[in-house]
Image (cartoon, rainbow, N blue to C red; front, side, top):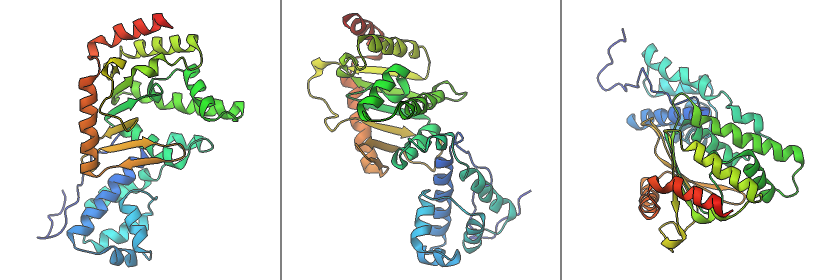
Length: 301
């Protein structure tokens, strides 16, 4: 039995609902717990930094989940924050090792930029993934041949080995759709995505067939925004919204650029993109029409 806490002592959770095995998300969860404990005790970042013989900026990065953790640092911070009950300390210290375990995607470090590595880690633990695309089929729905055409478009001078590594990474990401507890993927794609014969008509026909087959999964929804809509809500371009079952994690908006990416998690920013996504879903053809439209587009290729 856990020892009762003294009045005013912080009470961290002794049983944490840990998201599906992503070290990226575990670091964010652990960091959020440390930030909550520090703020409850009104301890400054500077004081926390002194306790672990580091700068306040390191503590800030720890709380944001942007660096790996050392057991000694977390233990010292828990002592500073008044967390002394062994069971409570272990609830958080037990996360340190798991949060530092490299994810499967680290095997692709040679072709995985750091700004996208974060997204892959978040995607791995999301409960809902919502995509809006205007140029390409979403990565989680691409065939090998289509993905290869996309990679060659972005990396025309890449070696054959590099191209295949990038394709393998994309295929590996798709395993989450078939996991025991898969996320719900809800993709909204512009009609132009499906009319652009990337890789040639045969590749595109195979790609449409793959989407049709993937629609058999109960956790996959696809909507098409037809040309007839004209201008629409997402004039700013493609974006993704990730939602998590872990309450310590806010929704994250992801927007990819040519050589970097933007991650938004402030409530006002996320709400704005959620509103745009909802409007897109209303402007798009109903879900019940997706299969019919895909078959029509396939025939026109």
